[in-house]
Length: 633
Image (cartoon, rainbow, N blue to C red; front, side, top):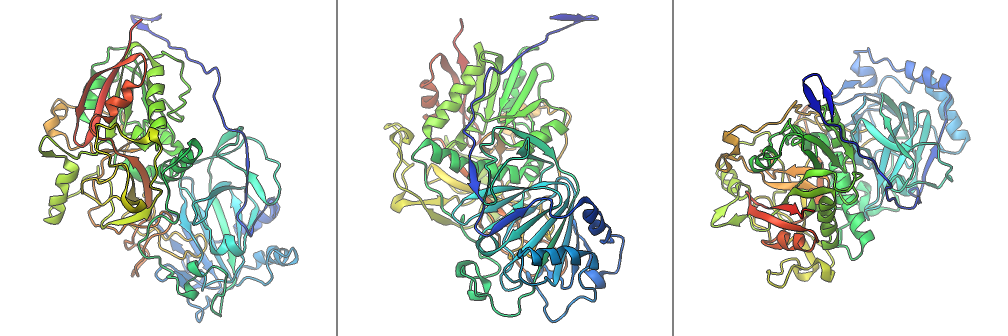
């Protein structure tokens, strides 16, 4: 305690003794993918960038377009986003810039490509922009595709249909060569964000492998800058005869995928490693990808959470574990609030709002034991995929509490109808059917129409509900349904889609996309201090907290789109012909894993933690909630 004028100021010091980490591993690059660093010199880079005249207004020469989220020019042939192809009979008046010829000749002599490209797409991305996962249209272009990165570095994610993901750092002046499997089968995309996690030093890796960014021990944040990509391709004049017919539009596969399930149906985990992989794929990566859109729908604090926060004495230390965009960090300005979240993109939003927050896993929070007067975990624990991990998350909250400290936990409820009252989540269904639904800024999305995926029918004994509960965790015939919007749950473990609602067409091709994608508005509703008015503390006026969102990222209200969208692939979406680059188009669909809690399950989970008691529990608009208190000294 120090005295500052007439005010007493309390300083809290905390430190980290150690942080557990996985052993560093390397991952193989996708078959046929080669990354050549420093392929062009700084002088060549400057020449290439100066060759692109963005001030030109003659769209007929280079098909230049000022798209909503980037600038693009086409040379040789224009890639058309209305049909995901090129008009091979209508070449553009201007061929490839002559400044590119020395680079392309070097590509041929180095055997990166066997023939000179005749089509070039130049994209310019500012910080925070990206491109959704896609595969270049098979029938439009020959096998090899070259992508030259100029300017700032970025991280590109390659995704196999079986669920494997390889993150590749693309330094400035590097050349990416995609052939064979990496070109035809793997999708590639860039998550829209302003920072990337990259190795702190240049790793020593072979040409066929790269450090796994998920286990790299020495990582640092790299701020994105302006990146310009030159993507060179050769127009195809004969049908594609690749070895991947399931993904080839020349062999009957649609260039625009129909509404589909995730490319590789996940199975319920049978070990800790499986659980971590499931959550990484269907929780962590999803919320990093949708962070901006998600944050724009999460700005109204829930009244009963506000009531808990308002009850804390001035000067209390509060930890919001899974703080999302930080909407609860400013509710009570008299407490010392710090947040953590698994999503770096959401933590960036917290920082922009002036909140104290850091990236952390909810199972290993780098705060000193018994350092917090209160903790909140709002819509987080239901994203852990085994009972063992859900229990560990509760134990971690209790570890942070001082003796006598309290924790508030919210999880999504299996019982969306309770005491003969439907949650607003179910009530909105009737409004939609009557055509009266008017979505608010809290809108989230759900799939429209039902689909299912195959999933392993066995569950670990530790994952089964207590015998006193109805066992709905098992699913018949080994299938797990993708949850249908505004309906009651019929199983506890499920995938919930998020439609990346952008409002405008993304025009997202860095290299000719085989499917349409939506683009995030990069729109964050910025708030200085979230507060709850007296009226909003009345549960009857609650606009519905809905359910939670994700592991270490805050709540999801689960309110649907104003215009239903079909459920879709995690990496590809349906497409429709549009009349202009600014017309609406279907958006990407990301699938999120949830375990919805039955009545009494959350209390039973907390009862397994020593040194803590359940002070109260309640049902709040489709969520089960408990307040825990740690035993005193």
